[in-house]
Amino acid sequence: MLRIVCTCGYVIQGGSDDEFWANAEDHMAVLHPELVGNVTRADLLAQAELLRPGALQEPPVNGTQGGIGRDPEIVPEQDA
Image 1: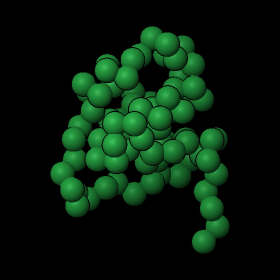
Image 2 (image 1 turned 135 degrees about the horizontal axis):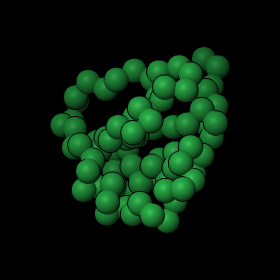
Image 3 (image 1 turned 180 degrees about the horizontal axis):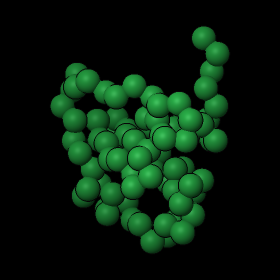
Image 4 (image 1 turned 90 degrees about the vertical axis):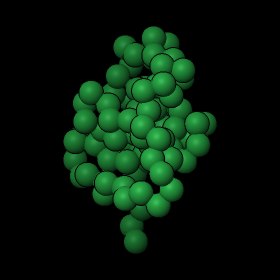
């Protein structure tokens, strides 16, 4: 599991390099369009924290303070 905390406080993570990068691209496209094309996959992978398997993950945060691995603007929460 890879994780990075964006400067806006949003937690981006993914179970693989590809998933992590896709989540980061989605986040940048919505909230930081000025970074699209300027921040590379290699840049973020170099800064990402590698979490050990089974490590506790932070719970999603409601509102604009972020969440884990998805933007509410892109993928709305599903009713349980």
